[in-house]
Structure formats: structure tokens, C-alpha cells
Image (cartoon, rainbow, N blue to C red):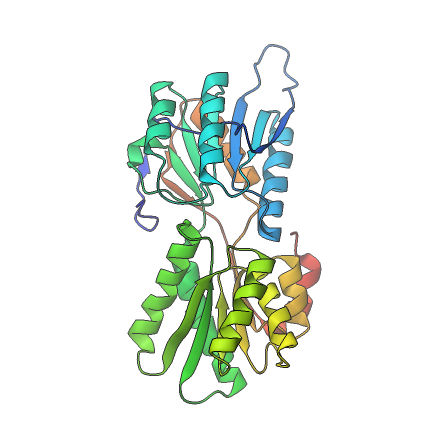
Length: 333
């Protein structure tokens, strides 16, 4: 898999992927450059889907930024199905777009279609998520360090437990993201790194299952967790939406989220901050979805044959419950 922490700066010179899925939602939008003689860049973008508030904000950022940049955007919503993204990428290749960008649903299964994009000499840019493919098949990744987000979640949980005055063994339930997706794999990995290194004797993950990054999934899985492990102390959710669904299950079970069960989530969407301001979430590790402006700069540079870093990271912060009310009015997503 792409080593997100040790990317080196490299020249742009490779190609790869993306296309409109026949069975996915399609939204072809375009805007032309104002310059009389210049031809607008055509960008094919294959999105994961619309599974969460984070993803909606990410899509809005990409569309708005493409319009502002004067690009012709061919947009596909894969509805969380890798096969839809592969079809989308092949469609983009057939259309001979200038650059392909996509946020892969899962990390594996992309080699064949990326090689097709490379053969067509169409550069590919990954956004948000990495893939387990030869690095020569794509130009760069624009996105977060998910492993570090997992580490940050574990470190901020230490503060949450201290503030709550919790002593002794900590029983943790983990709501994982979509099985096989980079953020699910890497957030779990980073959290466990800190847990194994610093809390081997006092922290235990007693339940861990995918909620597919959705609010409904988080609620359903949390209901099952509470039946099998009624004495859970902490919930670590790989995104806010699953955490928000879990809150509904916790309240339905007669427990108080944020008190009876301490909650740490990842993303930082507005609904998450509202819940945190109400005392229902204890801490949030931010994962910034507003990647559009960075992506358009990269696309322009790549199209012009310029050089970009192999991994362009986003700037992010962490928030405790007592910061929620002040931070909420400034949230842009």
C-alpha cells in the first residue's frame, strides 16, 4: 500500500484512472475559461458516494473549485461501489479527459484500470484516500494522514478519560469505516499503535465492527454492541456520522452519551460539533474535506507538466468538548 507517511517529492510523469459509471449517478458539469484562445481543462472526477456529511462537503468543494478554476468537470457518484468507479474511470478514458481524479472506495483492485489510464497518457490524481497499487500508476495523493488521525484519536482519548476522572480498565467499542477503505484500515492501525505502546494493560477493544461510515450503520452496530457488551466505557467511531447514529442507540438504551459512554469521533462536520456542544461527544479529530482548491491547483500543475509532491497533506486540528461552542460558528461544513 502507498506509504502515506514517507512520500517523496517526485516529477509528474505518470498516468492513471477514473470514468463515469454506467450504473452510478452522473453529473456532468462544465465551466469554460474566460480566455479567448485557451482550452479549458477537462477533469474527470469519480467520487466515493454521498455516505456522510463529510463526503457531501467534499463533493461541494470539488464542484465549486472546478467551476472557479474554469475547468470542465465530468463528475460521477459511485454510490460506494468500486465497480462503479472502475466503470467511471474507463468512461473518462474513452472521453479523453485531460486529468482523472478519484477517491477510491477501497484500497485494492485498481491496477488494471490505472494501467489503462497510463496507456492513454492521462495522469491520475488520488484524493482523500490511498490505493494498494504501484506508485507509478498515479501522480500524487491529496489528502489526510489517516494513520496519524488514529494516533491523534488515542491521544485525545487520554485527555477525555482524565477529564472524566476514569480510573482502571477501559473497555472500548470501535465503529470501523467501510471494510477495505483506507481511512478504516489506517485509523484503526494508528489507534492500536498508541494503545499497544502506552495502554496495553488498561485499554481493551471489546467490540469492533464496520458501520460503513453511515449514521444508520452506526446506530445498528451500536445497538448490537450494547447488547453484547453493556459495560462499554468508550466509543471510538471512525467518523462523526457513525458516532451520531451510535448516540441514538445509546440514548435508546437509557444511557447518556458523553457521560456513561465517552465518545471520540473523526471528521469534524457541523452536526458532530453540535452534538459535542450538547455534551454528547467528548472529542473530535478533524479530517478536512475541503480539498477542492488544493486539487484544482494540482490538476493545473499536472496538466501543464509541472512537478508536485507525492503526498499533499491537509491541515487539521483536534477539538475537546469545551471548545465546541466557540468553534461551531466557524465550521464551514
